[in-house]
Length: 394
Image (tube, rainbow, N blue to C red; front, side, top):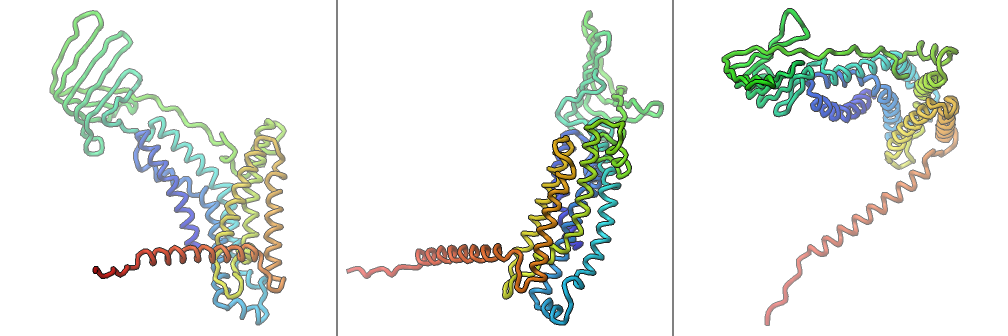
């Protein structure tokens, strides 16, 4: 179960990691912020990885008992499926409590932290770097270009800067080397120390003046960074008490109440669905007699992921006020629960019952046809590859 959880969370994080690396590279931010943003997304991905881990953990346990005939022995000595599901349901209760804490409290805070990191990355608060070989605008009146950067940006080479002021004066500065230095009196100003360069001062009315220098300190005013918004711009950033107070408040707008109620019902139905996973896992874990088919594993993953996507669509529709959240979210839950209960009743109380027996038969026939097709191709390939004896010359 833990292995499946780690694998599912890792796959989701790796997919997001590639996009975050591209985003951070474009914004010119430090690479370390990627891992902070991924850490903020772990609670969101864990809310899906935990049900998958629970489902497949129970499924593989019962599948091993079934394929080794131990399940038949346990059933023969009078242990029913209800008795065998006691420990899985104890584990389910623990994971349900963990998921409640995630989706109602931890996930909203971590999502807000992720949005804050993204905002600070875009605004440069995380130390956005100057891209080599491109013009970078600083404080709206300065353009800076650097040919080479060494030692993580501490040593700069091939520097060109263009600075203008309100009076129309323009300074064009070129230098062989340079480095950024912090100032102690003001955190909004840094010093660009230039070495071995030339300054061309253009006042607009007179002939430009040209000055050479060995060392020149150029103060740069950093742009002011606006404060990030307060938490609560989107309903997914609200914790449980806030969702309840907004969703059923007479003072809030109808659109905000609909969105809060949709978010609350979406999170709740995702948690309640976990109580059905042991029954689903048991129903799909037991293959037909004298069979080792793993079709149930594939079907279980498809069912859980599809149900999650249906809930996401239902939340979006309910948030727009088009459908009541009870209908949009609890309607699919009732259908999903009825299907799982029917599958469990078939496997547990119907002699020889197999919930996905039709799928198993179709899958077996398809496998045989594919096997025959490959055998025919192999025979044809061997026939063409067999050597032909040459006739003796007369």
